[in-house]
Image (cartoon, rainbow, N blue to C red; front, side, top):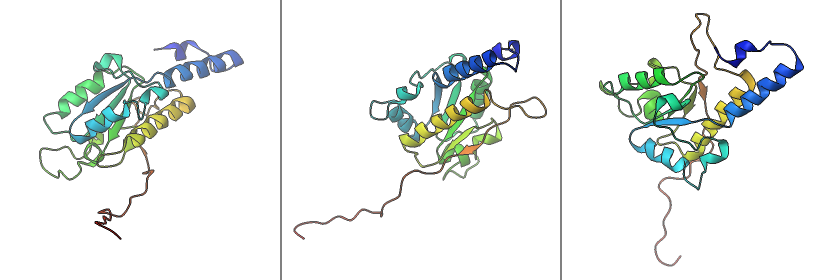
Length: 190
């Protein structure tokens, strides 16, 4: 379908060309945010100057699925929204990647109701799970870096025995330590 089929798998030139292609793909991820609720604010914060998603080549947020290759599902997804998410996923061109950001997108979160999907991985393949409620911008950056590592190693998303795309299902570990809650407050002189 692409340049990978035109290249032979042996030889120095093709391996160097493949590493150049992987570098280009890794350095130009274009995410499409599907953000609802509080996780959407964290997606916006990730693109801000403090966290600077542009360092990883993913600063171009595309709101058209045909121009993006990473779908970031952030927040809860209801049964009415799921057909839209599936259509958006189908319109993204290959190779495509999916990030499930937050507890609500990954497991339904605290919304254990009939209207909220209990994990989008039941309907579309998820490559990276970003934990948290809401997850910190650093965690989304770590999810983007996980996708970049996979692109460097495996070239394209893996195919299963039936020829369909297999999800990577990478679960990130939290990178911060939770402090004492609520924080101690001293009033007056101590």
